[in-house]
Image (cartoon, rainbow, N blue to C red):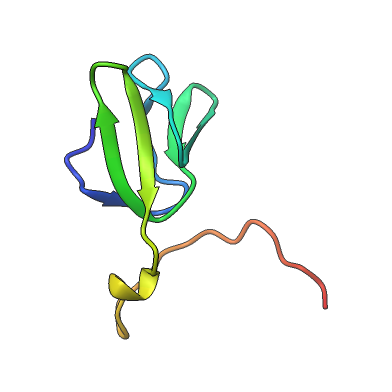
Length: 77
């Protein structure tokens, strides 16, 4: 379980043995990942991890911040 308060899309949140994916999360190859930028919510009673999306990323990201990402698709115009 992570000590972080927020996460980015695709970020590892835990294994499927620890938590089931809730809203804003998905399972892939036995691991649970975030599907959006938001606040991580661990429900220890239900063994579920969810991500509550932030309404506006601009409230948290500022000019000059470094962002690391992985390009997975490029659309043609």
